[in-house]
Length: 96
Image 1 (spheres, helix red, strand yellow):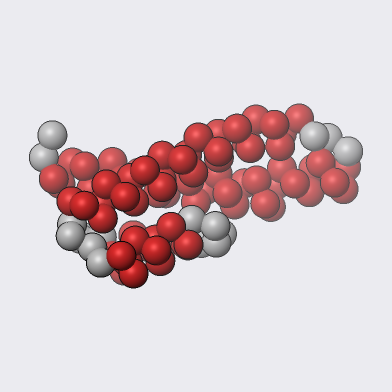
Image 2 (cartoon, rainbow, N blue to C red; image 1 turned 90 degrees about the vertical axis):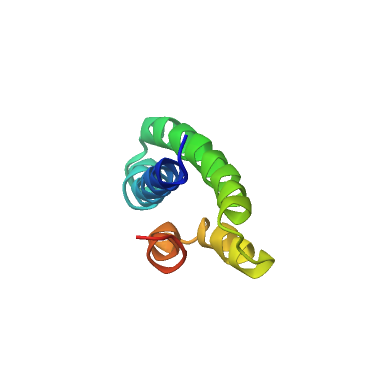
């Protein structure tokens, strides 16, 4: 697998992780706590959890592949817990 395709896969995982987090925060959680429908949190939460783990593993892989400093790795992992953080990482630290 080429370096460009590995970066592209990480970008896809990053985008999906960010979208799943936004869905969880702004759709699934309000449905659960405002309208009493917890089903969506179970589905979206599971998907988000899997994508989160893949994102962190991918961030470490990019750390090694792109020779990032530990500071950039830490910023990348920290951004995974911010609603729009992965979009920032894509624009700031990944080659276009």
